[in-house]
Image: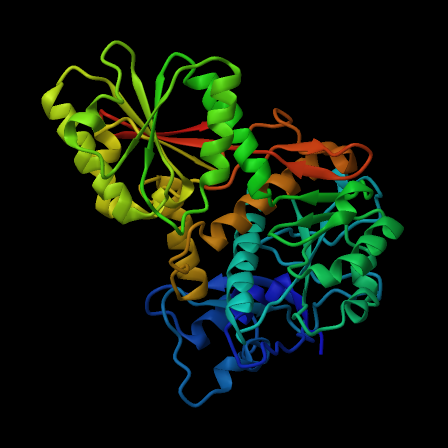
Length: 461
């Protein structure tokens, strides 16, 4: 059964149950209240000039025998029964967190609330659901931030599990009224959804890795995920631009499980075509043979054919030996996205060897912006983000902030190209290019640079 979720209740309502059932609120809500220390239900009701029974009716969890009002809780504040505005069938309740006004009839998306749909598995049955709930919570936090700069949002969300019927969701009248939809997670839902967004001129943002051949023919689609081949090709191109004056050294790590051959072979072919000399060595080589692969007159850029941490540790030990014997030698490391998970083990060597890591995201736990969002997530949802890279809530925040701000500024002509507006992503940059006569594909790429002075910069392309 598809559940219809209103943004006006979601900061509290997405507390897990086994089937993610969320009751549709019949009361009209005028705002949310964050509980302060020593506040009581009686005091809050008196503050808003409503009856205690009205406050409890808007917050059914208060009826539980073990309910306790706690500092930091966010509760719904209803209109008084005799002052609630009339609602016509064409209107939807909007959260004051997003906007204090109902959507107008103005057709220009830049002059009204943006109507957002989320069609993802929002449940607690498996990992897919839990990850997508966190992603969705990030979207909600972005809406909260956008409200502060005058951008209003009318949010609808549907639980679309893998075994669900997407056609049932698309039959909801609210779906056809969306300006933009985030989803789906499953490839088998793409045919129906692609046809739907074309028929209703809705922008469709596909956040994660699914097969979506419709991208090549449907101009309304934005696909964020990039294939490994696309990322490899872009990384090789940027490598050749940035390190054209370096001496490349490839280290064979004897890792039979490695899947990095496509990158290293592709890079070597490009180096050969440009007549750039490089050397190949092996982790099992003698100290003397290993050292001979390095140049003493040019800066060296080292590339491993494995992304695993144990092999990286051995490589650093060998390179430390080279550096000990030749203190003036210049060595830079070029790694893989997986290396971002190894900072606890290898951080000092990352700094020491001026390391560059290509990635489509960068989670920086030391960033004040990241820390604020993590704290806000904890306050709103009473839990921490999952320990995953990238963070799903931060991904949802960046995606929503990027697209909703773009739609607010440019309307439906927004195409996500570089330079359309200034936004520094928390974790996940986006840059889109048109795929022929079809939709738009994300082509963003970062080099995360660990600098010898113990600073980290993210270089965006």
